[in-house]
Length: 445
Image 1 (cartoon, one colour):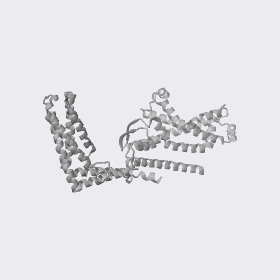
Image 2 (image 1 turned 135 degrees about the vertical axis):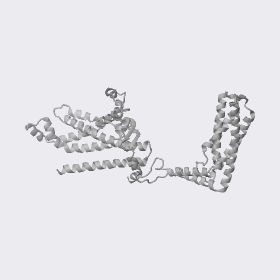
Image 3 (image 1 turned 30 degrees about the vertical axis):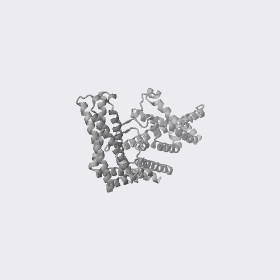
Image 4 (image 1 turned 90 degrees about the horizontal axis):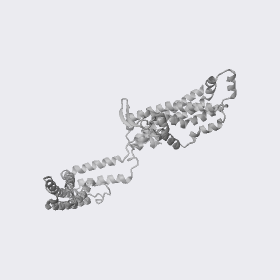
């Protein structure tokens, strides 16, 4: 519990909440390796020689590819490409490959005593040497191509060579600056693996997030609409099935609480397939909960009522069973009609149990999660705006719990999600406190 609360005050993400020691060691060793390569004279001298050799060999490749490219662009027959260019290209690429292999060996941090899979030299750039070698081999056989394809291959090799030349010239002219950039980048990656205390930053972010205000609004609106529906429908059914004039009422009561006994997932899938745009009820009622915000909200209310009315009905029936028959008979003798008996006699006697049931079901609506999530993922998506805060894209029917859930599942922001759930907990505590106070006041009376 304490850990969960503490997470709300950190920058916890999937990446840093439980990083492997191997990942941390990987980056730490890469940083140590780069510092040695930057600072130790023997490493700097060797690196300088390798960089110069690499740039020199790449410039030879560049010169030969430029010659072939210019020859074809000038209208020369690609099948008669001068052998001097082709042989020069083959020779210079082979030299570049040898130098690149030396580069891989020399800048291998593991070989230097720092076990890591991360190299200060871009692996992507080193792999381009292999691509250049393969392409050079193909260019030695012009007869396998048509003019356009051969020219495109030459241009591809030309562009790869320019990339490599620019990269290694940067190393040649500012070796220390390059290493400093790598060390800074590696340090940032290492920092991202370490959990940090950030105080109230997550809460500041929360209160400037339009999605939070939308989810708070939708949650409160859902409570205001679903609770009266659940309680009203449950109480009405309880009164109806409590009538002794109704035959087979016990069997009918047993059947009517089936939604309570059904597995939630089965109920959710049934409702989803009924209310999707091409479902039976979706077509009949003209509802499109996948694309229309308030259609989806209406279905949430209906489904929540379906799930909860058996609970309210059962509590109310139990309370009705405790109403003395003598009191009912006395109201008959006094000439009270059915409405007056309900309002003046029955409701006051069953008020407390129904109130307790209402409190429980209100708490369930405050924590609405599975209903929107399973029916349509709390959609549809759209543009969400909040006054004085701004606008952003999001799920238009996110309840508070779903909002926090998506911050974990989609954004993988555990610290931010924890701050959301702390706010939800505070709302529920305020709600429970108010109801307890109300119940105590009612009890005192």
